[in-house]
Image (tube, rainbow, N blue to C red; front, top):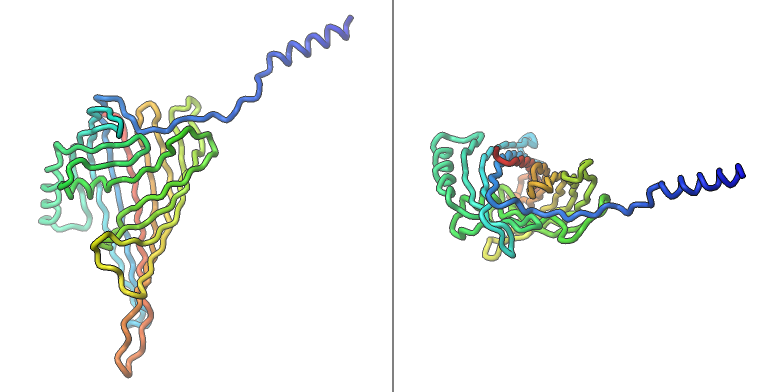
Length: 277
């Protein structure tokens, strides 16, 4: 009798144990509620160092520039292609910059007060005003980064995108990046994503092709946080490191041949966003 009671207790306890739960899959989308105002701050630093082996003392030259841009985006309308949003540029800070150039940049940027962008659910940004070059520079025509399907924690997806190469007018970097959903917050509202990729140079149609001996390669790494309730990326940090090699011209007779010029560029970007209270 006692053994029967023990067996029944074990069966009852087993029935109360949770069954194996499959990995939680979620849909990661950029889809802010209509009427929401999102405040954003973009901080970007570009560090460039150039070295020419064989030159005077193999001297290196370096330059660092930074920019901080505060903007607001107001969700106006959902469409089949994404959310239409009105953008407002509140302030721009550049360093280093002359007073004249900074004032001119601010003046042109503030012309974007009534401009519209369209943000697709996978994160791609399209500037609706085709002639607004300043706004394109601010938002950078961001490529799609998110998976279009459901993803589980630990799952990866790959996207190919193009980004402007700072300091190389008329050139784009072709990036092949792998993203991974690393984790979710306890409530599942915040998704934490990591990304890694490689970069190579491509030229825009009509741009001057790089001369023979010009090589560019690089890497991309970073993290992304998505607030699934807000429907927006609230924190994005990325680092792009580019190495370029430019072959030197043949030295005149009697002079030592210099090695190729090496240019290293490091671009760090931090975007923070929150719903306006």
